[in-house]
Length: 431
Image (tube, rainbow, N blue to C red; front, side, top):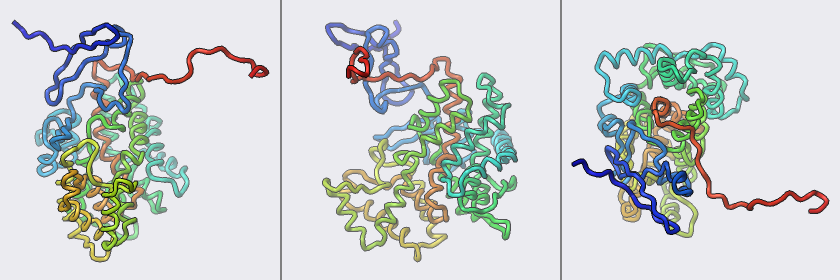
């Protein structure tokens, strides 16, 4: 005899409801409350949706208590050590690691779509010279639907595929050109002879006056930054992409919405905030002062780049990012860079000090990625755009999964209304 499906009993106001439960492949069971309002005339209150599963997904799984991040079941540390960004892109998009032939075909398709429509040059030049690169990216990505009409029909699986490849391929070009525009340098076109990460670095730092040779250590570090930020389950920007896409919006509009959400300092701006904190500390001799402030419960100061909202043990991405940070700093040197010296000393203290160890305030991925990007020569204004280009594959994978989900509905959260009840209008002369 088959086991009876598990249920949860909800008792309220002298009534009881039997709610079905579902078991994921990994993680805690879930109470299915889809019929709660229809059958019980009540609904739940969950600010930030931190206890609510908004969708079913097979892409990414996070266990914050164990410090575990899985993409399609593969641990992020294994992928970071043995794989590279475009292979992880394939994995996120299609569900399995590619064969050699599949990977070659995928890399070729991405490489051949890195150029932008030439008329988009004028779109960049319409922004003020001091426009933030994220503002440019939101506008340009949203405008892609005006240039690529052959990949906006979300009901056509082939057009969804073309849109996915275009977004992954063109986002580094958009980000690099936003950077070039912000500093007044000429745009550098992509090169098919370079790999994904090296191509992005070349578009950012090459100039027509002289050749730029991408150092393989820097290229590897950039590839890892992209890989480690590729997807992170149902975070704010990913949920925004799904919510926008649930209305039937085209993929370019949906991704532009995700970029706008990522721009918030509580989300994509964390590594920028971390570097700004390091600059505020200024010199190594001032670190004890700030450590004392961090330990003082009455002081509003908080050390940025330590601990994580989801990971209660350690950020699994940080261990891999630390390796790249050490390699980059060894290559470029930190002797004359006071900010990087502060970062290294702060890292040492955080890994040894009882206060940080007991509270598990380990350096997270934002701490190390900010150090690496700063050492490479990127201004803090480019940190979030690099995050955005890295996360694009996660957004588009989640968007494609949502579109193909037969249970997908337009997002429509409810509210706990606390305003005035019904009342009649009062004529202005009687108020």
